[in-house]
Length: 140
Image 1 (tube, rainbow, N blue to C red):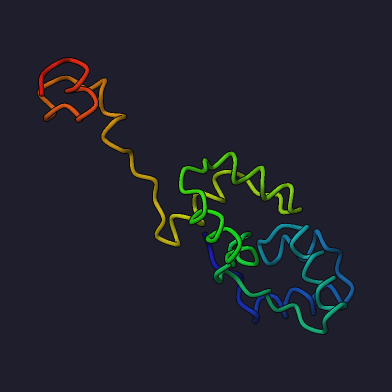
Image 2: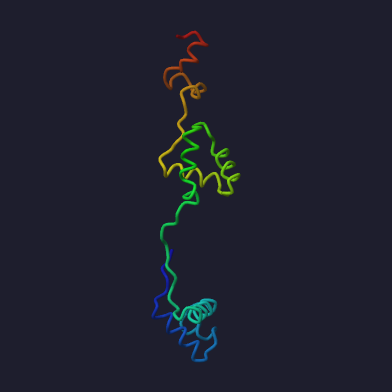
């Protein structure tokens, strides 16, 4: 993402527009868009300066206010799916996507690992069969 235009340029553009030139004429002289001239003039009238607003920064997670509840809920029911957790949050009035829940849990260091019983469909060369599979097939 490109950085903002310099404050010097912004001030010269606003001064030219205040001197009576049209926004399109000022835009052509300074090689900026006419809409940009309009926005800078509006910002100058509203705040007293055409300076750019702060860029970047770190936004807090949408679930930051629900952190304790989510962590408690996941520890109570470790088999809870992202969809279930998203639905429970919606019941609490917090509307987030399942991706937001996953991203929050990943950031907290919580991951859902597959257990050995779910590896049954893999080919035999991938390792020893699980205990439950060995008992059923008689390989134990």
